[in-house]
Length: 112
Image (cartoon, rainbow, N blue to C red; front, top):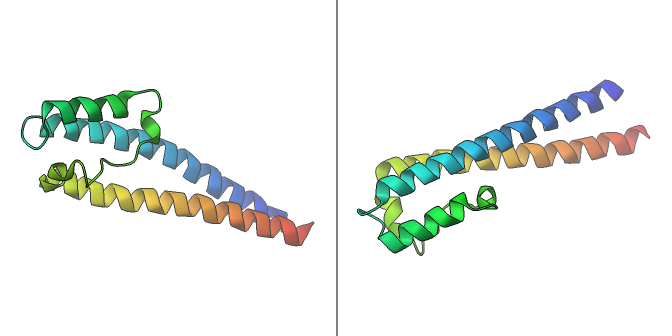
């Protein structure tokens, strides 16, 4: 049973690493789309606010721009496609990490 625990550990480790890398890629893409939407879908004030929030120290903790306040960004078909794909990927990675931790806890509970 110890091999199963090691296998789950590596599964979680790989998915945490993928989560961090994909989140970094996601933030860079969001900044790119914010720049593309400047002047068309976003006003200069909205552009500055979004750029500041995604390039700040805690920028990597930001989700996607709010549909309520920046709904015009979601009219850009490229951004909408990226949003849909990225949202699915983040849900998958987060769920994989959570289920991996849960599985590791269950394995440890029954083996010790």
